[in-house]
Amino acid sequence: MRGFDLQGHRGARGLAPENTLAGFARALAIGVTTLEMDIAVTADGVVVVSHDPVLNPDLTRGPDGAWLEAPGPAIRSLTLAELRRYDVGRLKPGSRTAALFPQQVPLDGERIPTLAEVIALTRAVGADGVRFNIETKLFPDRPDLTVAAEEMAERLVAVLIAEGVAERAMVQSFDWRSLLWVQRHHPTITTSFLTSARTLAPRGADPSPWLAGIDPRALGGSTPRSVQAAGGRVWSPDHRDLTAAQVDEARSLGLAVIPWTVNEPADMERLIAWGVDGLITDYPDRARAVLARRGLPLPQPLPSAR
Image (cartoon, rainbow, N blue to C red; front, side, top):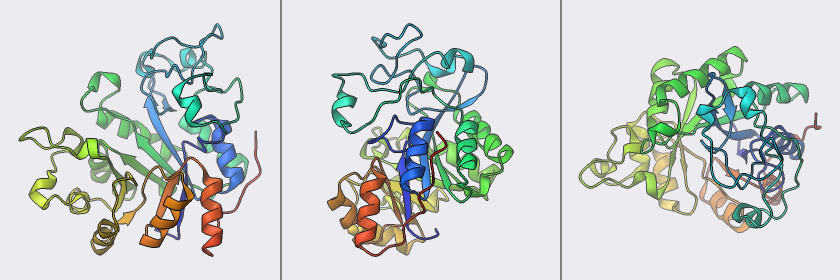
């Protein structure tokens, strides 16, 4: 890892519509090392940027301008042209998500972008050094929601190579199958192993279906050792579950540690003191303030192209 990695979660979700060109432009204007995002694949095989495999009624208005009343349809069931008809530039008033992010500034007319469009945005503002941390949003317990893990990984890598940014990209996932595919077929691309209490939990006598056959119980219950056993170089845990001892263990194994999603300055201060290599946050402005107080280098803010 090169310096402290400040990652804007879904762009800057606390400040601008998530996983949109407006959100990524906001993160670049604040100044981040890495744009963090999630992907899905449309019915016509296009890699698009979305956290949810189905359209989220807290974020989405239909072609008629009305809020969706329930989740859906699945992105994998829509062509890109069909997906473009939905507006994701505003949080639904009164929704749980709107309550969580009262500072988010809406921008009506934002559409779910393609990954290629996000990369093009960085070129437009001269962000030639910004990195991309891209999550393959998969659900091994609900395989019908998305394309197969291997297909999603393959389509993602194809875009990264075609756009010439593979060397600046990191592929992350809770579903480690896609990460093993990347490591096997494109070993120069960095992989980041996401974990949460839910995805680590075994299913009775069987290991968790999220971990591609790795069983932490066979490794003394150690999550860092499980990531190492899978061939990982970066571990991205839920910051609420992380301990200083785990950071030390991970570092002793040669793993970088980048916890998610860290929004409170006190938590940022604590994690940086523990020696994490970066953090993922909905509020990159807050993180910059913490980094500045600690005398750490700050990523260069870039003008908006939007």
